Length: 359
Image (cartoon, rainbow, N blue to C red; front, top):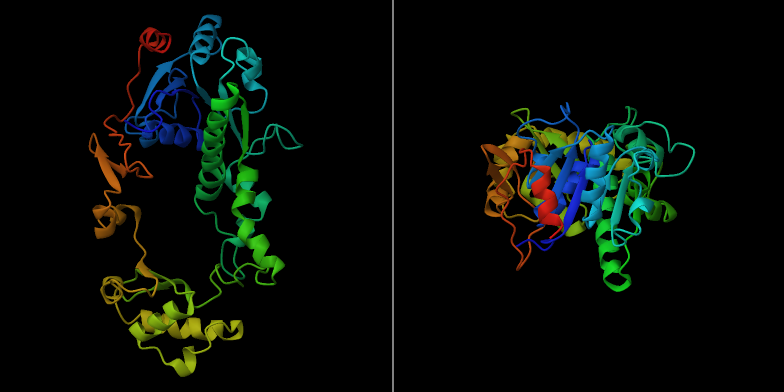
């Protein structure tokens, strides 16, 4: 059984970080039920974010279905919602509604801007949230536009992960207090926390606000991607001196040129020379040369190639459900094992869910 076996979770239908949060909880054994809208355009067969979950359709404009939702939430341990502030209250499903019937409820609220503040009622997406935190400005190359990092940094890094962490912390606190609470998770604030290292480096004079001028943002020749002879790429992250020395040795680099690793004035010149060296071999040739090495070199794979990588296969990092290949649950536990065997696309009968949860 998964470590969260026995927890009952309601997930209000949403896009972005909330479905991933529900999937992570389901992967760990929680019983997650999605309250779907009828004919929801965002619901489709094979949606990986629905794995391990059940779903039921409710019309939240119907007083009868609102009552059903209240009954389910009254029996739940956790609720996940990603509406604008005030929407759940207007539906009669706000946290205060359950203080008597379900005082232990953990009410997880996921928004971009947070429940309060000047932007709280305005729309936004991942790119907007990370723009406000300085994260987007830091991603990209010098003299080029900032590069959107998919929706990994905001929605999933600053959103989902902080929401789940807050919920698990509230669950732990509930073991002593017996009381639930509201978790107000804002993507902006989670992303701001992800930037903590760079505030520290700035205090030490080791990080500039200028994009593409720093150790980790493509300025350093030993921390970047390089194109190979077959128009693919390798990644190099040889920061520590002994790792850098191994990189230079494996690539037979001229140390009269590459000896001054940490002189930023040399980085543009060394980057050009390193690019010439990398371009002499294919991606797979370089992968073979650096196999088992501490030079911090790895091939840049697309997400389909990643499933075939020997290391990822040895770790069973991917699974296949109903013919759909996808990432396996993470992290792994020494004792708790959850076998995910459902794609989570089925619509469950609401009465059966209520009967189970109200035992």
